[in-house]
View (cartoon, rainbow, N blue to C red):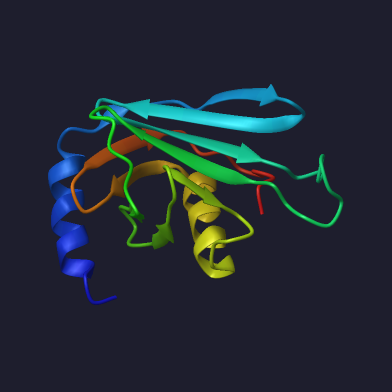
Length: 139
């Protein structure tokens, strides 16, 4: 990726202020939810492993919230192991069905592995440091 050095620099800066964040696991309207919050933002992952609302369409998505209230158009997730996943977002949301399948799979792999994951946009960055979620049903 052409912008990788910039993302790595932002990741290193964000990693220094990482706050341990455990995933808060729940269920909302029949969908599994996973929320993690750091100092400057929150990631909410909503999974639809059983296709609750439509047997042919997966309604999984993630929602980003930044402390400053901005909603980015692009976001990159960077793991300390070097994996990355980039998404276009609208109103802070990226859906499974609109995402590149390889990018979505990479994000889920990062979350299943755990550790530090930087969430980087053009103007903001925060780092999650969370436990692994093996067997996450969000593909």
